[in-house]
Length: 455
Image (cartoon, rainbow, N blue to C red; front, side, top):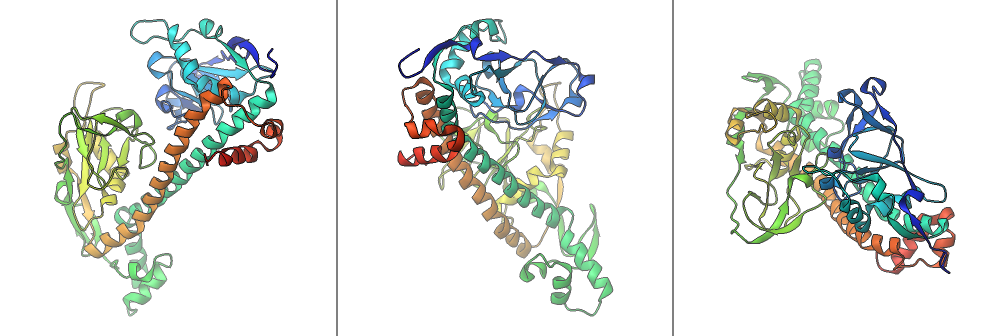
């Protein structure tokens, strides 16, 4: 033990591998986490499945356990379980031993040093797997428990803010998609006004609008008709029209980017599945791929990415800048007067996704949607005033989400900078932070980061 209380310990003296395997018949109803549900290098989940969908033996975990992808390409997939459930057997379930703080252990396992050590002893050819026996022999100097908690609180403060931003983004996303569905799929304002009109045939449009749509601004509610008419898609609001998708939305519009030019690159792994903007965008010389600009919507067209919901709204570039990504993207760009956000909400709709999935062709495991198949998708298009009001309602929601995501990218970069310094002891915590970590760690962590200009 050093004079500062830090002690050299082996990893297997700090952590246990939980080997609680179960059959699918024993875990019905529990959530399931596979490697595809853990974001690479981001210390968070992208989603989860259901244990009812799995057919082989899995590992059981409980809330707070560390889930670590042991397949070599996925060693940067590590997360703290937010609930009880089951996971792939290619994921280690890890729990701290006495004298070790679980979140400190998590950040140790998330450090590049630990991941690189794990990689050294992976076995196998095509998909090498880490070996617990080797990883257990990794040695590191460990601080006393109060300092472990303080370090975990410092890093956790950043991750907690990132998670708060992520939840806010989900709420904003749900609001935007709910408005789209209400106006353009379910036609709620029109149905409500039609019902009131039947009861009060002599009322003015303003009176009907106020009574039928109390939650809409009067100037918006009055734009909606109060009756339907027949169309090839069934009843639609009177005065609206049915159009093939390419008539109102450009598919794979031309974007210019010279070969070798460094530009923002969004790979398939970082395509969002729940919110509209990606957590990670990198700079990379252009080679071959789909090009896009702000206001475009990207849809993954290949299985299983399409089914998993990989879709993005591009608002993370500079004005006029061109980015690029996978050849397996379809790029959508609404034509005026439809606002750009309309394309994103449409791409997230059940109707569009079901059509796209049913349009996939190709061999098993490599099926994809041909861009020209979207000519067979028809949608109901509202008149210009309603389309413009939709843009006014949706733009601020997605903009707030993008701002929060940009902040989260900064916080994640700071966390990744601080993590190795704190875990190794290169950056030591003040005694005030260390000694009060267990009681008021988050508050002290915020003060510590603020004093250093980090928050």
